[in-house]
Image (tube, rainbow, N blue to C red; front, side, top):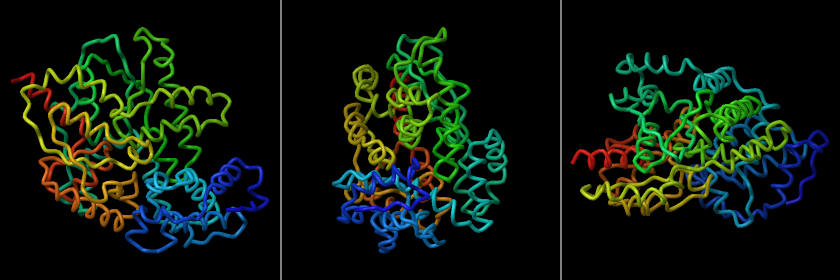
Length: 419
């Protein structure tokens, strides 16, 4: 696919990167078969191939319209198309560039712009916790769309953190909304790793990984979040404190993991942070990548645990963004669980996709219900996933408990210890 960049894009970082990505595209259309929005809407412009043409036109100088913006907005950025593409087109990076260019040229309606501003700044604000606390008090009176976003108050043991020290240490990102909405995911991670002889450390100055601002058009704000995290993590990465040097940066939210693993690319142009960002990306591991090494130390502690039937929804950020497949199912099975994927469409997005379920609720709910129908056929006791967004979104459509797989493992270990 040949692209003649308009003068305004020639020589720019975004223009050159987009042009390099577009050169790989051969317009074969394989991606449309695995695009969730194309499956729902059947519109070529709501699939990767059509969106690529829209972005190509903008880069060649065609003025984008509100329709261009809407088609790009409907993209989940699930990156399913990337794992399908035989040419290795990095569509996720391309659509971020395309959205940025279009948003600079097409003004959004005031209400829509305000909603995106509130999400961008509210979810990453220190006031998010108090706001959720108020929301919980008013939860019975909220409309269903808001009630779905206010998770119930966590149980009394949700923040119980192990106190033992271990020679092996990892750094963990708590996240921006997870400590408020589902703190047990973080503490369960620390408890399971503690049982395996690994200590979890947390850098107080770290916060949002940068994904929320970046995906909502605030590129500079997203980069600022990344730099802040690097600054907070660096003493532990470089072994500059009494706690020693960490061996990895562990992510139990696959969306954060996908973002942090791309810090090196995002900050490659920054001479002050490029090398540190590259090292951070290299050290970052999704929690499932540690799971193979946890089986041996944990298995003896689970001998009296009966098998639990689990349905696993692999988030897009895990299976497409990070290209990680199979570890959760395989190694939880070794620990005594029966874990199954949906027989159909396990590769498709559930509709959560960060803030997508707020900004595109109709499409998000259609994808949720489609996903739950496929998972429901497994008749599992619990649905497990690996990202807070998927967990919260799926739970709004089913009475079956939806949890992070690390919580189920932590609970089983606790039962074994008490037995």
